Image 1 (cartoon, rainbow, N blue to C red):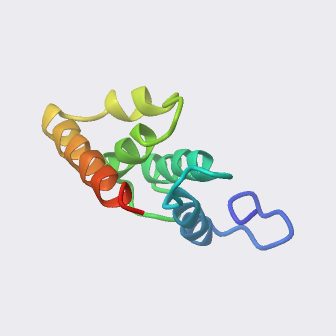
Image 2 (cartoon, rainbow, N blue to C red; image 1 turned 30 degrees about the horizontal axis):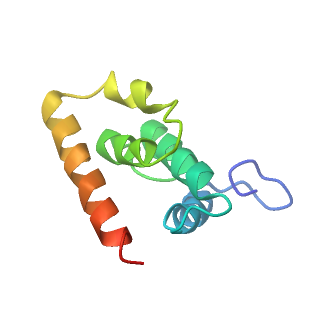
Length: 98
């Protein structure tokens, strides 16, 4: 709603906050995958959050279908990809105990 301004004033920073709450949800009930994808898109484009390809890649990798992952990967160095993969592994470790 915040990203599209549906019923509220459009605010990508607020959208990022809500997407992150959905993205952090484990197990993946409801909109966790969609939250991860949408949060990745915000990072990819720098909408409401600083542009960060590593963060975008991480959230896309944690999304089920990963349809947006190639867009981030195409703009990244191999070092950035390795950093993002390390973050993905850490996220999975820290969220598997929930």
